[in-house]
View: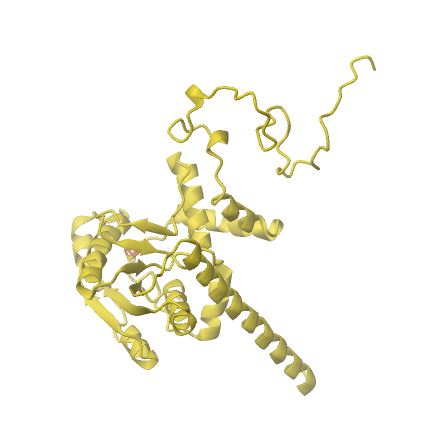
Length: 303
Ligand code: SF4
């Protein structure tokens, strides 16, 4: 490649990365504002597993802390579960080099899980339950007011489909919740961020990634299949993931059939026309099955 072409390619790459950086910080700021995730005076405990997502979360929050109008502190916490081959020095070295306050919690949950779960059965459920309890305790000890997790938009959609396909429930992963012990607020500031953007950003920032397969547990095959399904859809129909994700924030209980969410048993005609009301026999204009109809179609029965 000639020097001119190389220079042009480098300039294009720098431009793309700049756009990516702006997008990531804007989306995290927007999610945080939309759900009031981070407020003045918060101490945010970032759960850092060493994977790309939690690295990106920490990195972006540190930058937002520098620029945001609200004052908040960040503390990174890694739980060393004593999995064989876990490179214990990697995260402390990285965090020291970045000047980030951090805490490493050493708890051998790996041995506990190995002892209690019969060989060949999945260990994830017990492992994550133990991890959750430990992280809640650490949050208390550190005086953290928020616990931040690195789940992103695609994790949330995958969970939605997993629950629908295998659990018979319309349930995704919330951007903000109160923990099951009722004592902590858990936030997911990457809620609006696409996984592909995180992958690109992680490669650019060269985070010291720790593989998540050290425990030897098999990957969640169903989640992997859903992930592939969503990626295939998005390749074939660009924008579909965005549309599905938007849908999770625009729920219409009267057009589902959960009687706990909508009082179907007691609805009555109000007698007042509502332009936004249900046109019960028409196709939904927003559906993609055809252009919206300007007016009801007249069926000429004499033709
Ligand atoms: S993959 Fe391994 S570390 Fe992760 S939850 Fe499952 S058992 Fe625990």
